[in-house]
Image 1 (tube, rainbow, N blue to C red):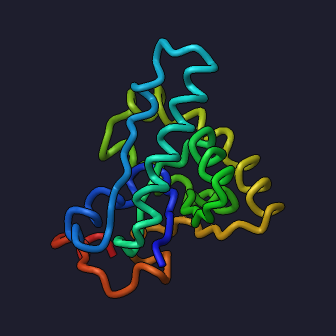
Image 2 (cartoon, rainbow, N blue to C red):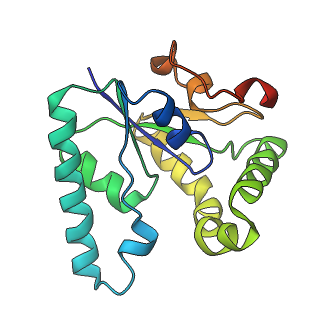
Length: 168
């Protein structure tokens, strides 16, 4: 059965998919750019339609996993369709792990991108973790040097990126 895995940026969704195209799908919707200039109602419709399109792929049961954004507006629409989501998040309970994750993101995308795209999500993370725990959703926390394939048991036995070992 296909799993839907929501993960924060810089956790290996794209790289893992590129190395395992036959079993993983990275459902990238570029929501931070796609929703600029849209009214609240059109944003809601955008995420609703993205969720319906993802469900078509999910229902085919072709992929082992579909990776998606951590955007709550999109995740809400997926949940309305009755889809279970596995969440991979920075560890808000461990400041060292959180700093390692932040450094990873800045190294990959730069401080401007972090500040303009991810900082608000990081600030809201404690509330998100609390909400997810209250609804008994499956959550894995980022550990230093680890990526999706190390954290989520359903991803065992996939092809790891060629340079993965140097991060351990």
